Image (cartoon, rainbow, N blue to C red; front, side, top):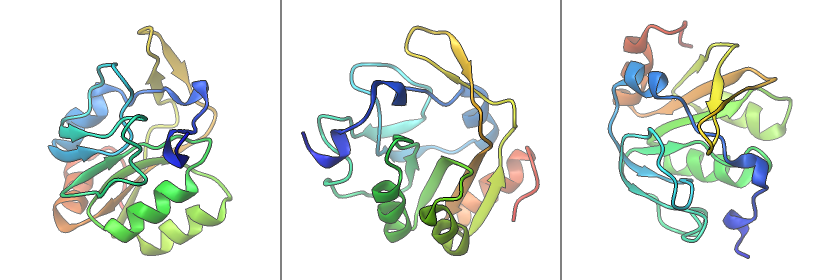
Length: 151
């Protein structure tokens, strides 16, 4: 298995539609899309576990909601790419503080955010999710969403 495809079954959690509606962004690429499952990500292209988004070139404005079981390589590539929005958990990991220092904008998301599961059910999460943005249009999208204060 390729590095990017080494994910646990528990990583298939989808971002709810209301968050994308609030952002109003069309992405060029979803770098970590599920295989053969429909999501709400407004994206023209996607990499699945078969494609392995960690070894593929990223292009344009990306959406990055990586496997939370191994976020570090995804965060590193997101920082290097510098154009997109990533949804990641608040944590004490070294990657989190690096992203905190590098991102153009950061916005917490509702503490009661529920991810959607492949079977259509929702699942509350036990950590606070955060949106990290690179690029002026993505920073503007966080501000325009008016969900929470942007740093």
